[in-house]
Length: 519
Ligand code: TNX
Image 1: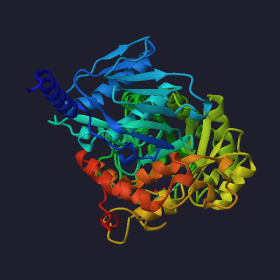
Image 2: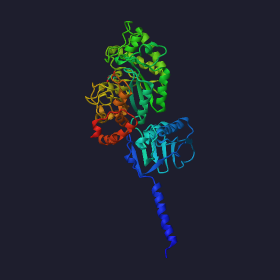
Image 3: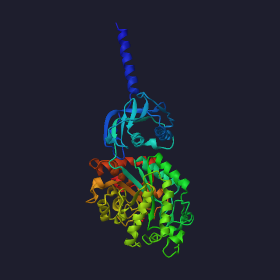
Image 4: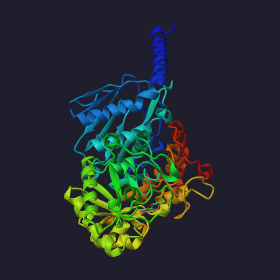
């Protein structure tokens, strides 16, 4: 006789097995996630967490900033998932199906930008010492999701992410990009787009080159012609443009919401034709030159012997400082070929005094090391090793921007249609294959504040050009700035980058599709 009870149990067993096999999460491998910059450590646990429309974002502090970061996470996940995840504060340990953003007392090695990201089947817990660290962690979480998370319209698919734990913190505290808005002017929305892209790779500085021979791009209320006249053109004779102080604030705030510090640069005493053309009194002969729309460098100088020059600089710096929450003002100082060295040195010394009188620190291109550098002045190495070493001999820190490796305006190869090649052709491997602390003998780890990738815009006219020259090289630079040297290697980077191009496509980034990516 058939044992009814037994049959019943066997059936029940199969049903249960069926249900649990249907509902069990797919096995995903966190170490296969394509992460840039590569994190310090990734441990995979082989399962997955599913994000759905019931997932909650929890925060452990009633702080406006943390709430803002929580809302930022919602805004990133919303277009492609269609979920409008709510952010709630909690005092308890996380419930299941939540992403818990927890400011906590992590080990000091995590610093202000490090984080722990723990993904289990039940929930996601992110811990960091600061909100900035939380923001960086969210960029990692974003990359753990399938590429389609970056889509701007709703995707019909489940959203599983691999389980495991990532521990991460940066090698260098300064990881920057510079955009030259002087040779060609770029609109506020283009700068915001660039900020979005930089933030995704954990860059934390946007240096804006706001003035040059071809244009003055920031409104200075006490010297209005700088922009109304000096900003009225650009390389090639286009209409130029400038940021009103309100627009500039909008950029600074947008960057701040992405935990990016804006560093404004007013280049001097050279690279000043736009200012000299706007105000005759800034010229030694009181004659204003014409506006300039070519691409030569090194032909202009403020009149270093006149008092009005320092009144002018004081006014500019004062107004700029009011728009600058960050600690630095960049004073340029490069290629002053028509300023005698005996005029250049006292000029740089005096301009440093002006900047420090407003409680900001000075950064300048490596030539400023000829002057007497103040305690907190930082030298940006771009061309001359001996200048950078002179800076170090004066106890300055150095920002590494070697033109042969990080100049984003350099062509990739001889076929690149835009860009220059005076320093080098810079293919993706060359841009990646260098190490800040080994690049120049005598510039050691402890002297280096970080790295920065400048994009000069003589030949760059719109956001598509910006993206084409920056991507994907700047992704490599972000990794050089963040990831320990011992963990970096070209083959591994290249294979991740090949996979990452799909995400760049989904994000609509006009990246350079190097032949190295199809090898
Ligand atoms: C050098 S780098 C410059 C810029 C040019 C750039 C073009 C530096 C401090 N000065 O004025 O735009 O080369 O690559």
